[in-house]
Image (tube, rainbow, N blue to C red):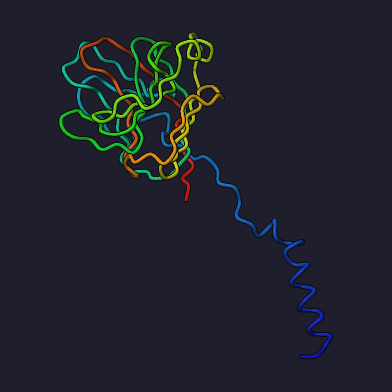
Length: 208
């Protein structure tokens, strides 16, 4: 190899990443929807109560049902950031992550609480397991929750590290948690009560 060729190769090794590195880098991932706003496609109901789609939102209604009412994602997920908007008009609810369903109506695993102040909204509860793992203070719930509109929730789960944000503020965090590494999402309605809950704009970025 001549000196000129060696010099050119060395120069390209330095300059090429500077000129084209950004363009060739992996594009940042974009959120993709997990609901079409018109049907329950991609999800299936388990238990009692009724799930419908109204004005682009999943709407769950229960009237003193015998069983819990769940809307469960068809797919399973491992590492992700998921975000959505919610309203609890009556009662309280939850967004399960990495859950498994055991008949007739049991969602086993971590549940991020969704509901009014005093319900632990933004906290993490392990159903049929360790119970409350992180429960926000009621004064923080009152400060963060909107009582007359949509609330925003974001959940990031990567390995045993799980973080929850409610309306832009961190409300719960787990580190190296031994809970299940993969499972379904599920939306919850309680049994034995009258309630209505709404979820919309459920979106995900799957992480390595």
